[in-house]
Length: 147
Image (cartoon, rainbow, N blue to C red):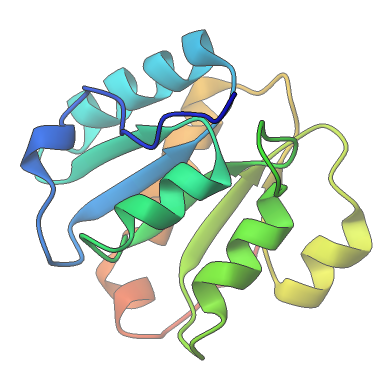
């Protein structure tokens, strides 16, 4: 059975063609809903789109280019979080990304300069890292050292 390629209803009807979108790609529906809800409250000027698979996220990307990817490493479907990141960056464009995983291969993350937040994680730490990734300095290409 093929997975449906429709975004979560959380703000998906507000998808726009600009960089004010955050993609939350997490196959656990409860965690995905929590992250989308919290990010919507903390960053009301951003559109938050959730998807369960990398394939869904790539389909959403045909409508908008996200400013930030919040990725799980282990995803349902045919690709993991690293492969999804590579697909997004395949056009030579970098994209701010935070991996949320307890067991993503450290070498893959280091090679791509992707910060990782291990599961289980503190929501306040996640929000601080998201805020840092969305800061004007990050958007201008001025990067601070990762934790």
